Length: 301
Ligand code: FAD
Image (cartoon, rainbow, N blue to C red; front, side, top):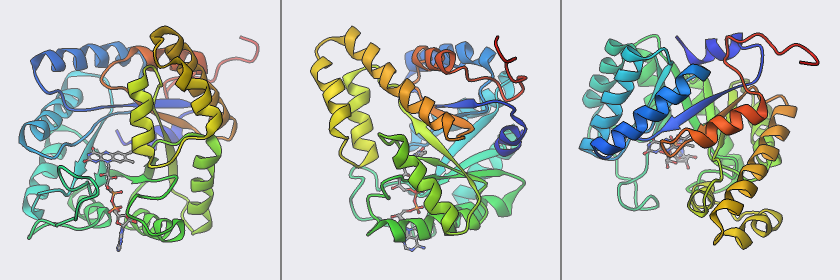
């Protein structure tokens, strides 16, 4: 089952979830409890990120295969070009196909250790996500996603250049893009407009972090690569020492953001989970998000 087909057939707003590979057995049990808790909600897909090294990469490959074989969920594997020769990438992609993973998020990745350090490609490897998109496409009937950056990728010189390369990557054969974290709906909508104006009609989906703790807030600021707007910092910062109040306010701000995106016709929200399911389930419920297979809710019900 391909992500874009599921989204195209959805009759009401839906959602997806992102996990990372577990570090140990206890972590893996937590991950699987969350996956099982989300399974009845039938998200459009669930994805597992791809790390920089051996055991973490094995964790992605093993767990995404298990999602494909042991659950009713639609799996998407993240894959990066970091430290991989093309032969190794072919192997991993072939393995995904063999276990029934038909959706791949194709990424360049960052240099291990320092994300802003010098990018040194593997001598027999790839340099840009665009090349990985082509490779995945060449190897089979995959649905391919890519990343997009509402404020521009940290290495991009300006938004125009960033958009140019994003559109090239989409035109190389990607079916959709998932946007990095952002603070205000307008930031995402401007990205969507830039891509459309540059001649691509690919679907762009927003990445959403449920703001449950000061840690998720700090992570959002770090990943966005931008300075949060003052109004948002003023709502959250005074609460960083009060976990309950922070969670309530954080989830309220995210609910408001998601409502605005849905009002602008965004068909699907991609939630970061930190391998837990509670906050996502709460948001799904608040926002009335449904399985792509669900009938639209009757008016007045
Ligand atoms: P690219 O699209 O290759 O872009 C990298 C830089 O090169 C950009 O500045 C771009 O503008 C520029 N560029 C692109 N093409 C060209 C060209 N032809 N000539 C010159 N410049 C060019 N990282 C992980 O390690 N594992 C994950 O699982 C993971 N998942 C992610 C999921 C999402 C939704 C997002 C948004 C990011 C994720 N990342 C992940 C982070 C990502 O790997 C980094 O942000 C990385 O720095 C960029 O990857 P990319 O695929 O966007 O690279």
